[in-house]
Amino acid sequence: MLKVLKFGGTSVGTLERIQNVAEIIKKIRDEGHDIIAVVSAMSGETNKLIEYAEYYSKTPKADEVDMLLSSGERVTSALLSIALNEQGYKTTSMSGREAGIVTDNAHMKARIESIDTANMKKAIDDGKIIIVAGFQGVTMDTNRVSTLGRGGSDLTAVAIAGAIEADVCEIYTDVDGIYTTDPRIEPKAKKLTQISYDEMLELASAGAKVLQNRSVEMAKKLNVNLVSRSSFTPEVEGTLITKEENIMEKPVVSGIALDKNQVRVGMYGVTDRPGIASTIFTALADAKINVDMIVQTVGVDGKTDLDFTIPTTDWEICKEVMETFKGEVGNIDYNDKICKVSIVGVGMKSHTGVASKAFTALANENINIRIISTSEIKISVIIEEKYAELAVRVLHDAYNLDK
Figure 1 (tube, rainbow, N blue to C red):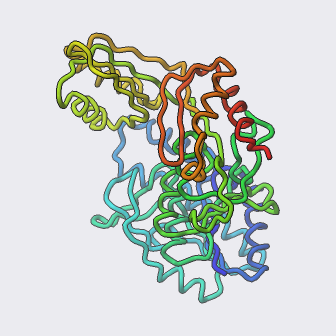
Figure 2 (figure 1 turned 180 degrees about the vertical axis):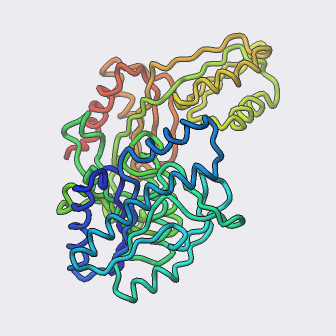
Figure 3 (figure 1 turned 90 degrees about the vertical axis):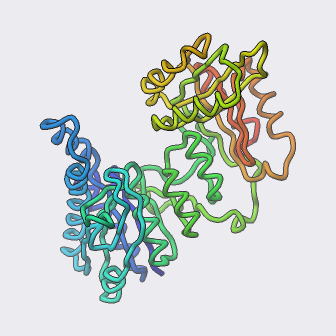
């Protein structure tokens, strides 16, 4: 069996932890599996390199930043290879270039265009364990080093697994799988044995931080079976993320996610004319602001109200954009004392009463809902932030997720 293993920054954060990763790889190798390990930079290393660059310039050239940042993963891959070689295992470290990863030309946020697996296949045929520096490739036009942005090492692992047709891609972090909700909020949260790509995507977009959206999207596209597990307790089985049809028993609700990184923007007394919503949200999109939930009231007397949510990190930029609409808006209000709570489950497609159960459970605790958004397998509500953790526990109980 060919396994792609990915180890994040916390898993390789110190020399001792790199040695621990080497022990995990040795055990899997001794079981007879071929291995491609993808590694992140040691925790804190990328931030340190960014600080180095900013010592000279607050706006360094993007291609030079990529050259700088990509070194962090190469250091880890070489150290891990040295550790394994010392213990008698044939290994080779590879940069993104050597692994055949070609990206578009968007430095610092590149997208993978293709992977030439020839070097990796030859190394596997030679009996070697491959250690790939994640988060990087080379641009298709200029052949310069590029980096993939946030979650780039996960993307590297999934893309390699898809390109080389690996049997599984295991993502090792500091948690041992996907839980029904954050165990720090609800101690009764249970680890899921399996979950569908779509459910994982909804949970990730709703605030769950275990896996990045882009890597799950790519796994779905390339039909790569993902396993989320911990490098600190590798003996514990993780959670399988796979196609919905591979899951025999589909629960109505799989998990509850919480996102406190939310600001509600209220635009009141907006001129109710054709195209006004298009104008507003195009301006926000041009400013690279990710709008989440949107509610528009019915227009009265030529005016309408718009409410929408954005990430807290986009708040200041949003204010600048909103200034351009002051002539067509009576009042603009911002509220960052809110949060988004989401209920996710593929079983919602075939069950009624899921939404009413959530609304009743929240009402019983006098938790007022400000905005509601739904998809085929997700219900999200905006509530006051002070009720965030109570809401998660109440909804977790309402759907008996601890059972």
